[in-house]
Image 1 (cartoon, rainbow, N blue to C red):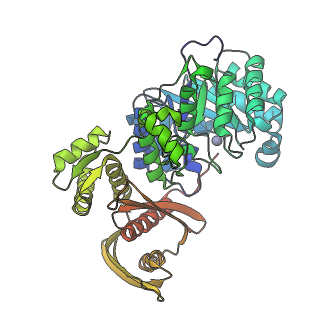
Image 2: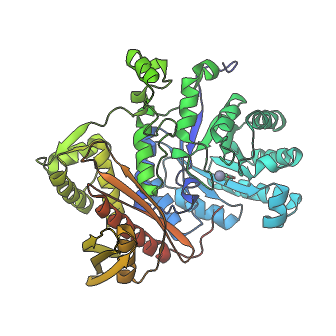
Image 3: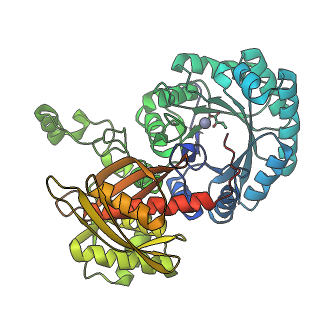
Length: 516
Ligand code: KIV
Ligand code: ZN
């Protein structure tokens, strides 16, 4: 039990849309970001870090759109210490109900020497100026010394003290390279609390390079951190960030250790949020992922099954229903009409109108003709795919055919609509997916290399929808794509074309992007 703590809130700061989106191959469109942000608000996060507005016009617009329409959480934008970045960040978040500017600068010797080429004194002055300016613009300012865990403590305290003195009300300790070990990281949090004077919330931001991001975050809370920065499904740079669902359930399940600490998370929304993020990012959730993996509540051995049949607590520390992992309900069939479809979507929190509703309804009808009943998870998959497909797609699939037989190369033909013109192509390949990839390359003139391919079923049973995720690489840029269908060859064709459309959008986006 944390001593002296009574019902104190641990703020959940979600950075899926900023740090999570920095994972290789992830490139979310503004509408997809908005959809994730709305779901994060439903989940009950305290802060949404919606992006890095100065990185590109697309990032700026996405942060602004989220600030203007998502209610509940504080909407935060990340900013370097450059004054022009801070002003741009402010422009992006200013219309939110509540907004925050998150200022960061590196503080470790290696970053100062190899990246910033600044002395310690210059860094301190940058922090003074930047936090001061951010504080003139907004009340809520967070400051992060990047690579804090490899920063000499004296210098760390000095920088943090300046940030607090200039008005930062949250100070974050980023374990940028995932170097921390729980008890050592906890000591660091305690020492910052002892050394840095003033009134502030201390936050942790842990990366998972050693597989310790969740453990380090929980240790930080034990040591006094009252904000945890994390991502859905633990996505993020390299090995990812602390996983939101693990941190939240760790705090909740081990009330004996963290009693008195609460979060505002509606844990029943965890599985749905995880599925949404997985679909939109194209990052599959590993089967054995804690809390949200499909096997997180599956029992294989006879002894375990016997125990669970008697009482689930024998081998489960989490109630599956409490994290939204109970059996997917059947909601619609092929006789369901537009009203029933729209009602079912709004019951799961998806409010579509106009073209988006028409496109998803048409796709639902096509699938319902082939699959008798569709569940909530199926509906989510259809909506995610259709929203991804209808966003200003350059290439539209009119028809395709692919043939394969033992001992022969597969052959594919495809007709695409490109800028209103029909383009037909034929190609051979080493298997059906390869042949599809080649035929699309020929039709679009885009040479892309398939770097990742995975198939999973959305629900169970022989008529389950198959979801295909692909990543492709072209000219040093990696993007993902996804497709769903009852037929996995069709799902693959859709996923490949979705990736090519994303590539076209990513290329069209402003080229001078910066990421922290
Ligand atoms: O990992 C990191 O240091 C960051 C900062 C920008 C907070 O993401
Ligand atoms: Zn980070």
